[in-house]
Length: 188
Image (cartoon, rainbow, N blue to C red; front, side, top):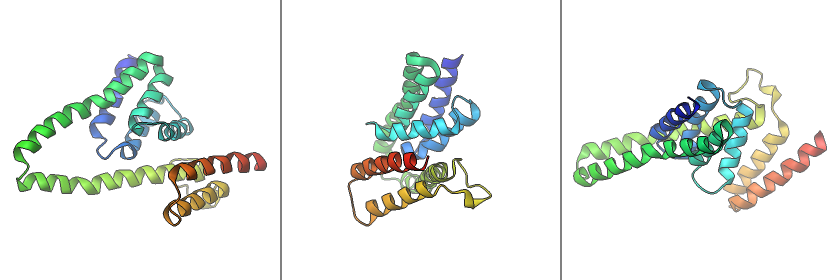
């Protein structure tokens, strides 16, 4: 039964994760934290962090990690395959349709209409991760004074280093990890 639940959960994620891994994070969170309480929100944030650091698509890495955690190696295989199966089917169908009808205005309109939805899903994932890092929960709390100042400082410095100084993302990630280890061990 767990294999069927893993298959269906990650099939849905793969089916509706238009826009890539960051856009899929709210969908994965809903499936593995809310619908099926396989993970806590803290575990989910940890898995997303690991999925971001490992090579490959984030949604696929997350599916593999969740699958192995929930049902071992068979669960990892089922979650991974079910996550990519909808994409394979959709891409083959869309390639055929696009090749055949690429000059029609309706096709161009569909593609333009998807952009705002994708941006909204990516923004939702970013806000959720920001709240998890700074408040320890996936939504903004009613009392905003409970913010984790160290996490906020690391975020702001990392953001500044990426967008104003154009530092390498790898350099920023390594520096943020080292800063987190040092600062959180000093304050504990």
